[in-house]
Length: 63
Image 1 (spheres, rainbow, N blue to C red):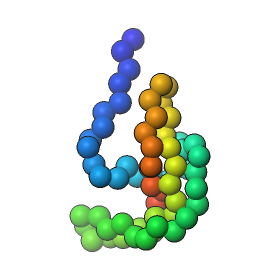
Image 2 (image 1 turned 90 degrees about the vertical axis):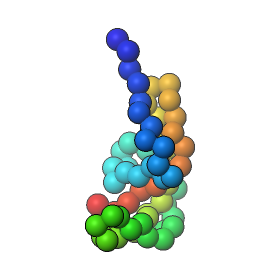
Image 3 (image 1 turned 180 degrees about the vertical axis):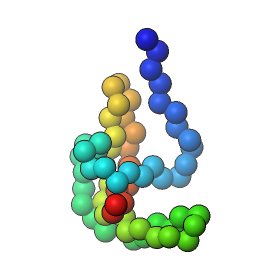
Image 4 (image 1 turned 60 degrees about the vertical axis):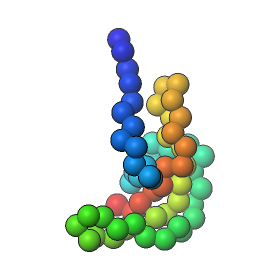
């Protein structure tokens, strides 16, 4: 079995699911604006671990 994670190269990785993160730090970091002009507050950040791969600095959004 070959497993891999595709990294889109985006400037910030985001999730609304805190269960996916380790080392979560709750801190309001401003707002993010999407292409459809909707906004969401950034509630904190943490690291996502998938097997042997750790992606640091995931931001957490409300919703």
